[in-house]
Length: 116
Image 1: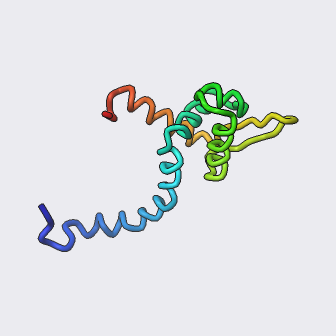
Image 2: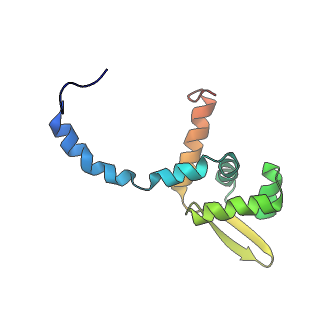
């Protein structure tokens, strides 16, 4: 099926077109969370305010190097922040919006919204 006319509701198109600029860059958040390991790490960080790299590795069942790599990617993508305490590195989510986004996605999956 296709539209035979150029524009059905010009007022709606005119009003919404400028709003699309707000979506620019948002795909990077979803790209970061599309990786299963990074999503698990992010989810763990929604359940705890802050986690050490070694604890993240144990929680998700990977090596410390793998956990560190993914945490660094989350930090570089602007989703996580870190602090050092001696040789230990602790990560947390950068803001509550990411926490809410992941929590909503998890809740949606639990409610059967996403079918695998």
